[in-house]
Amino acid sequence: MKISALPKEIENIISFFKEIPGIGRKGAERMIFAMLKWPPEKLTSFGNQIALLPEKVKKCSVCSNISESDICPICASHERDRSLLCIVEDFTQIPLLETANYKGLYFVLEGKLSPLDGITPDSLKINRLTKLISDSQNLKEVIIAVSQDIEGQATSIYLSGIIRKLGKSVTTLARGIPAGADISFANSATLAAAIEGRITIN
Figure 1 (cartoon, one colour):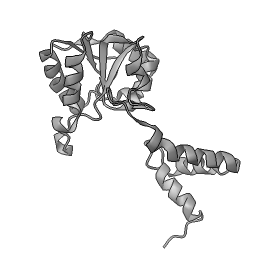
Figure 2 (cartoon, one colour; figure 1 turned 90 degrees about the vertical axis):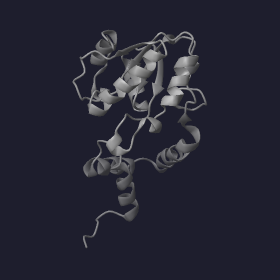
Figure 3 (cartoon, one colour; figure 1 turned 180 degrees about the vertical axis):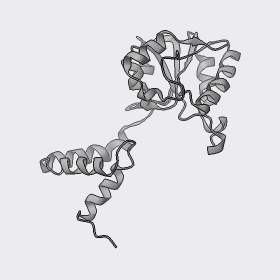
C-alpha cells in the first residue's frame, strides 16, 4: 500500500477539490498548499464561509438561480426587460450571459433531456416553466439557450413546442457558438453576438 506524504486531513480536502470540474490532483494540491500559507484567521474565515453556504445560499423560487433571498435580485428588479425570458441549463451560465449584456429574465431548467440517463420531462422543471410563462403578462419572447449537443437539441425542440402553444415567440442563439458546445465556454463577445443575432424557431 502506497504511503501518502501528506496528512490525512490534506488528502481529504484534495479529494473534495478534485470534484470541482476542471480541477485535477495537481490543481487541488496547489490550492490547498496556497491556503496553508494563509494566516490562521484567514483560513478559519474561509472555512466558516464555506460552512454557511447551505444556510445562506438558496434557489430563487421564481427562476431557480442561486440567491440569498427567496426571490433573486434579477427576478425582483424593475429594470429588467420582462418581455424576454432566457432558458438555461444551469445557474452557472447566468453570470456569463450577464457579461454579454443580456437584460431580460432567466429560467434555470437544471438539466436537459437525456432518456439514457433517466432525465425525462418530468425530471426537469417544465411544469414550473409553463406556469411562469402563462402568468407573465409582459412576456413576448423566450430564448432557449441550452447547449446544442444531441440532448440540448432534443430539449430545444420539446420546449419550443410547449412555448409556441402558449402564444410566445421562441428563439435560439445564433450559430456563433459551435454545434455541441456548452455556452459556458463561449466568451462574452461571442455570446453577445449570438444573443443579438438569435434565430426564430418555427
